[in-house]
Structure formats: C-alpha cells, structure tokens
Length: 363
Ligand SMILES: Cc1cc2nc3c(=O)[nH]c(=O)nc-3n(C[C@H](O)[C@H](O)[C@H](O)COP(=O)(O)O)c2cc1C
Image (cartoon, rainbow, N blue to C red):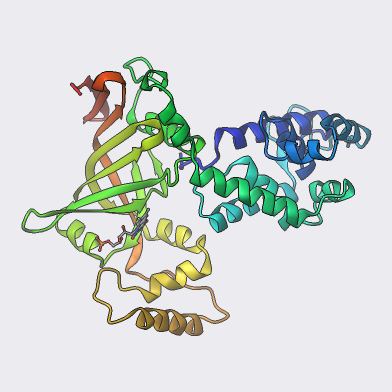
C-alpha cells in the first residue's frame, strides 16, 4: 500500500461525504457531499466562517434533501462513484498542499480546493451564500500555514509524556510495515512539518558514513521508496555498498523509527510513472542539477534550468536516465516511543526468512 497522505480529519470528511452521497445522491459522490462532510466534522475549518454569517449546516442538509438525485447506479454496488468534479477537487487539494509546502492533506486543503473548481456544485453553493471563494481560500491558507508552523508538537510538549500513546507488544501490529503506516498517519494528523522526511545513511569505500534527508514517496511490503539522482554521492555510495539505514523522528509524538536494509533501484516503469506525476519545474530541475557535483555559481544552475526549459518547450519532459527511485528492503526496523522517566519503549523487528521476529530492547 502506498503512503497515505490524508490526515485523519480529511479521511473523516470523505466518510461523511460518502454517507451524504448515500443519503442524498444514491452512490454518486459529488463536491456538494464533500462540502457537507467539511461542515460536519468536529472543529472543521469552514464552520467558523459559516457561523460568522449566522448560517446553519441544517439549511444545507435541507437543500441537499430537496435536490436529492435518484441513484442511477445499480443497487448493491458497494463502490462510491466519484463524479469528475469530486475527483478534481481531491487533485486540487493535493495541489494546495504542494503550494503551501505541506506534506499531508487536511480539511483546509479540501476547502481551499473548491476555489479551483468555480463551476462545481460546492463552489456554486458557497457563492449563493455570498462567500467570495478567493477569500475562503486565503482564510484556509492562513489556517493551513498556521497549523504547519504551530504544529500540535508545541501543544504535545505541554502534555505529560504519560499521556502519549504507549508502544506495546500487543499494539505494535504484526509486521513493521503495518506499524510504520499507522505512525506515518499519526505524524500527518499531528501536523508534523514533514512527516515523510527521513535521514538516509550510506557508507563510502573507506567505511565513512554520511547522512542526508530524503522524502519517503511510497512503501509496501517490499520496502520504502525514495527518489534521487543515481549519480549523486548517495547514488555512488549505494552502487558500491547497498546496505543503508533510514531514520524517522516525529518530535511532537516523541517517536523514532530506525530502519536498516539493502537498497535496489526500482524499475524504470515505476520511476517513469512517478516522474510524470511531478510538477514540470521539478522535472526540469532534475535535468538541470548534476546532484553532488561542484557548481561554479547559483546563476550557472539557473541558466541550466532555463536551457532545459527551452529545450523541452511544448513537449513532455522525459525522465533523465540518471534520476529515479530506490527501494530499501528492511531487515531490521525499530520503533521507539518516548515515555516518562526515560523508560522509553523500544520494539525491534528483525526479518527472519519471510517472517518477522519481535523483541523488546532496553531503553
Ligand atoms: C526535508 C528534506 C527532504 C529532501 N528530500 C530529498 C529527496 O527526496 N531526494 C533527494 O535527492 N534529495 C532530497 N533532499 C536533499 C538531500 O538531503 C541532499 O542534499 C541531496 O540528495 C544530495 O545528497 P548527496 O550529495 O549525499 O547525494 C532533501 C532535503 C531535505 C532537507
């Protein structure tokens, strides 16, 4: 399964939208159902704007009930059919997250995405109520950035550590990948600045180790994926010695994950697919940078960027062969949860054949 960027609140919005779709639209899930979800979640970012105008969510429910569309989908289908606008809204929420430099999708990204879809039913309704979509978008931006810069972390530090979740043999999950996914989601919900950032350590031919941050871009039972330049320092070190380590630290949750294993490049098809999904400027910068090589000046880099912009004008930017993904296949994964009196929890999974052995380590 791939890394799930939605915060718990955003996932709750989608569940509420599904319920609304079932109630008011058969199984067809459209932007107006997402809008209702955004109004119904606890402490949703849109509600204060509604309340400031003395608007009630009930009147929106009544409107949806009046306009109830008959289901066109065959009875018994379990799948919800997202309308093209609803799909575009989710995509626009991803764009918002990218614009604001956040690495998760929260309800504020979904609200702000409505501005990008002025013809959608959600946008029409907000306009009918007298909202200026650009103003709603910028209010969300302020909330999104505030949440990013004053993350739950500071609030968590006020809590006693005993109020933090404990890590035990019972709740750690059956394998480390399942637990890692849960911890990544928790880090996203806790508004850690870069929940998917991890330090990657490699070793050179003299045994000298070096570390740098990379972003986790996907993972499943086969391992953790990150993207980089194959000819960079890390790429050169990995080609000689493919044993490497990854490290996550989520300060607000007082959690650390240490991972060790072997690294292999992913398939060209997987790298192509990911490269194609990147913003054009990022694709161009992959061409412009000879990562880790000395550079005579900043302007030289910018000139290379502009050269590639001109070279690929009007064309799809192809993936440079020297840029792509690696997958670290874990052999050892340790979950560390900070606890009172330095009596921290440490649970270590070690791969043995195809299964995982679990043991507790002293803090
Ligand atoms: C939060 C963060 C995320 C980063 N993500 C990546 C990444 O996904 N891929 C990458 O090549 N470099 C990434 N970098 C830059 C690397 O840390 C590093 O500077 C670069 O890869 C060159 O490393 P090297 O010379 O050891 O190969 C990131 C840096 C930070 C601070």
